[in-house]
Image (cartoon, rainbow, N blue to C red; front, side, top):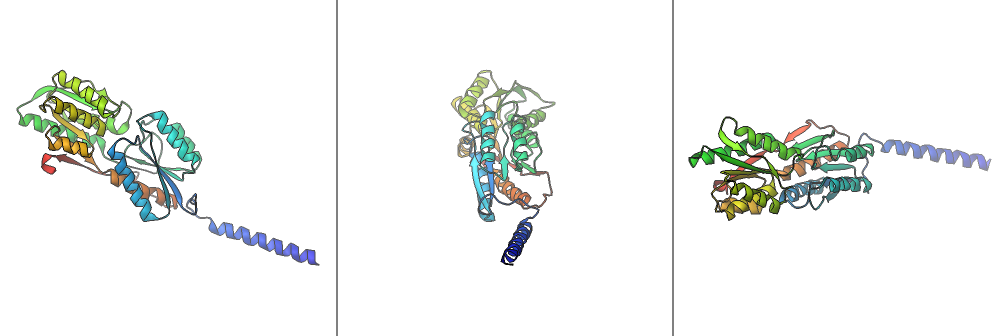
Length: 311
């Protein structure tokens, strides 16, 4: 009789345990540690102030949400292999979601496929890869590139310059965001008498970009476009050393870029909103992890022109 009672009790305990587990199951993903979601931000590098600002936005959102364990991972330089390593480390670290600024659109797809297989949610900030994600939050880079070109044309024509060579300092030929900026910039010059020279790549490194810009200046260019922060800083410093006659227009906002504009060594920069990318990207990641849907696949986070008058 005693054995039968014990058997009934154990059966009841097992049933209660199963019901309890079932009641904990919802449409969202359970957090990794202590009920918190583990969200990683993986950017192209740690060099640019742009990425520091993205991190700041993501961190602010994580603090407001209160249910996120947040980690920022990034290579020391722009390098596909190093970014893949960061993605793999995030997966191994138990990531529930990754906010990613892809260095190249195709290089990281295998790593992202592995992340998806592990149930990791992907949200793109600034620069997407060729792999499905919950949402992309970025600048309309092509339109912003066209704005940069129009700003340069306006300044050149104001000086009475209606023809001449234009140089472009870009990051590389595969980063989707900067490729789109260059495309938009070139489009602004269609129908004009200016000659756009072959693009040179500095991998976003300010020193390498400065050397490229200096070579352009030696070729007699009347304008130089920098496609990201490092490219813009390099172009501005080269223009400064050459006496400031060349019109320089760039991308991103940093203390150095703003100083170069203030000094008259750069005409303007296209300022993005990296804090919005990080902040809203984090909100999107948690929304999806909680089992909710997002309204838009793509969110334009905006851009504004900063010139000397705006400082």
